[in-house]
Image (cartoon, rainbow, N blue to C red; front, top):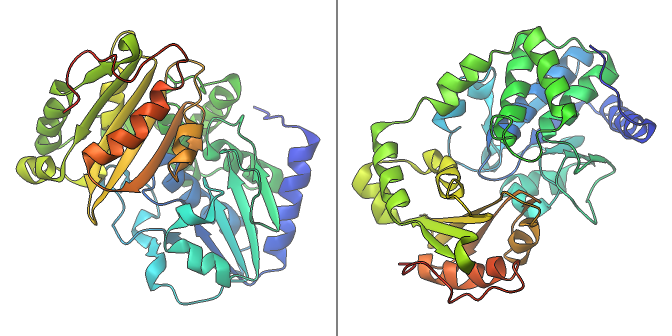
Length: 345
């Protein structure tokens, strides 16, 4: 099955390939708090580059010191990821995957600054990318789509391991092909990956049917707190550090909780907040319509794309809500922050 893309994309791929050609050492890194697209795409990219240029040295970095989230530990190569904070080298080339903003690389930013050259493969919008070459296309459903097309551009065979990683990237970033970004291109690439050895059931069993009992208890708390604003068009909930301690759930299990908040009938935009170590709160935003939540995330120091975005800010849940909620409600010009279905806390 052929995958078509425009000539400009081919030119951008060629420029990235030139940088790899000029390099002896290549570091790859995704964003902080990596999701399935970030992890699947970085792992697949390393395999693609190794297949094309086996003589070069590669290191695949984690932006944070936390281990790979349990639900993604089945991905081939995940055991070889290295925390960026422990990597002291200065690579010839640093490739940012699924992220264009240096600050969202966390500890990986220092490695990026030490690199001789920089490249980006991403599907999040960025006005001023810090790179010598980049393939940034917000219309792509996931970074995994771009990595797959880069592999095809290079003439690299899509092995079973590459396919498994990229299928995870695309399936998770499209919400199992349920979000607005699940376009024909995403389905074409996913079909190619399944033909190459990716297993939809493997993804489902590891990512969507692999919750701990502690997580399910936490989810019940979060669902019991769901509150609506703006006449029901905004849904919101939260999880405190105390909730995680009481239930025994881990932070890396919480990313899917925003989808529980998103599922409220009539809700168009959802906000989920969770307390994380260091006196901070991480926020997840989702849009079910044409409302763009990426601007809200950027205003709060985060990033993302139109239908899904995130941010991290200093403070507690109440402080985070007071900052984020007015921005979310402002997406609806006729709404008022005080128009809520029940108390927020």
